[in-house]
Structures are given as structure tokens and as C-alpha cells.
Length: 109
Image (tube, rainbow, N blue to C red; front, side, top):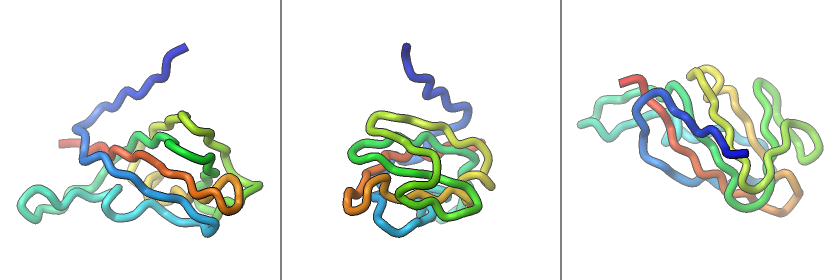
């Protein structure tokens, strides 16, 4: 069974973000695009893939190493809607094992 990584908008710059033992939000570089001559565009979605160690994610609450949706290495999710991007929180799935997330934001251009 293949993965569906369909994105409907225009892709932004792909980047990596590293998780830690402290819950965090996506950085502004994953939700905004400043590349267009200083014009700030807001991401409306993102493709997120776990590259190294597992992570846990949650919305509107901090995940912990035992609470939240567990994403394993190789898992990809597509987050739709800007509000969902801004409310997404993530953390290491295992204490001390920092996961790397590959993130490609999507814009409605």
C-alpha cells in the first residue's frame, strides 16, 4: 500500500525541524513564506514526514512521550488548514531520542 502525499496548493521550501523532550509548535519558517520579496504568505497546509526517531503530536494540548498521536519513522501526515498548523504541538516519542521532521509547507497561491 502506497502513501498518499497529495498536496493541493503550491509547495514551499522543504525544511527539517528537530523534536525534543519539550513540546513545541512548528516554527514560523514552516508556516510562513518570506521569500517573495518580503511579502509574507501564510501556509494553508503542510506535508510532515518523520525521518529519524518517533514523535508524538497533539492539537491544542501539549503531547508527552506517552500521550498524543504516535508517528513512527517513515510516517507522513498532511495537515490541512492554517489553524491546524498553528495548533500542532510535537515532542519526542521516546525521552532522549530527538526525532527529525521533514516539513514542506503548502500555500494557496
